[in-house]
Image (cartoon, rainbow, N blue to C red; front, side):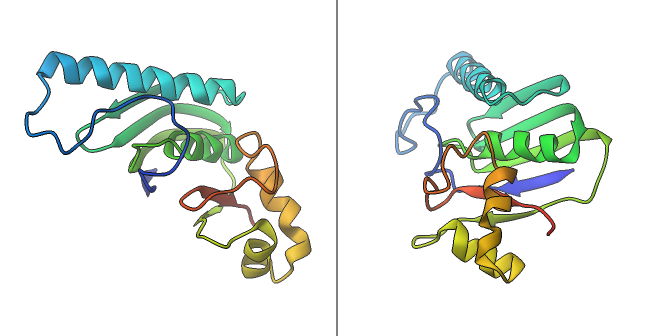
Length: 161
């Protein structure tokens, strides 16, 4: 459990949020409705990835750009994929991990992609062997559809070798 940081300008475009440069704060009812809509969109995106957890709850706070995720995942990999899916959404800056795991195993490391990265370079950095890039690709399915489709700001799971 803990807080994970993401780059809020990067990620899946699931919902529209008005510019943060507006002078007037939104009415409380409008903010609550926008947060509910965003929460539902993120939960739907997680579900569309085939990721499930018992009693999965997803909430979004637009003021802090934070997603809170709770529930119980069957294994560590599923939990981490849920957290990464929730965080790799445009306008999300942090994910508050309140999840538990039925069958815990060691946690993965996380890596934020920078310009010029590819999975070969990342695998070389973490495993000393670029040919192990498929481990990173497999660890980030189904969010990654192709090993060539990573983008700066995206957070990836890096499992133990």
